[in-house]
Length: 207
Image (cartoon, rainbow, N blue to C red; front, top):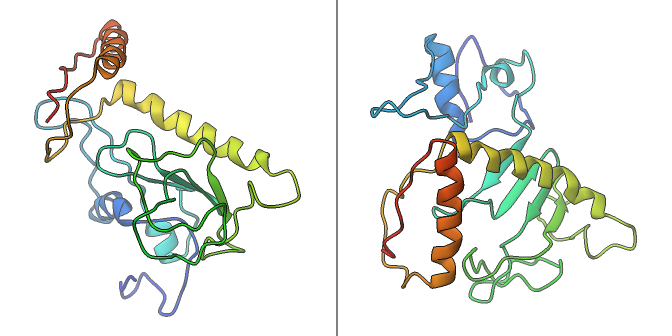
């Protein structure tokens, strides 16, 4: 909800995709300043933020047509919103309240990315099904595999940004168990590839 006398028309409504992340670019636009391109250490950074003044003032559409859903420790999103569709990889669970979902399984809560990741997502048409009850990808009689292609392309673009803007250390960490040899080998492979491109990251500690 936005109140901005003289700019936002009372009672107006928009169905564009926007969220709290976009407040940063919006406030910077209103103030007439540019967002910084480097952090305090001089390292490049990017804001996943878009100016919302066009949709607030009714002068245009949002530049954003997607939204990624992460836990703090995820690099690949657990769910993706793209236009009217939402692709859910990690909403299924076994330790929560019934959601009323009729898609694929009983959706007893969220297991989290570390415990369960679907090999194919649940796909919901949010305009027709805002409660996310009907999975159009796996539970309809028509072929709907096409629906996942745009989401895969959007996630691929996101993953490529990690090369130029490497993920930062978590703000708070807890002990997550020992580092296994297989995890170490995978991480070391990524480190070597990044070093070829001028990036250096340390090894995890297991904490």
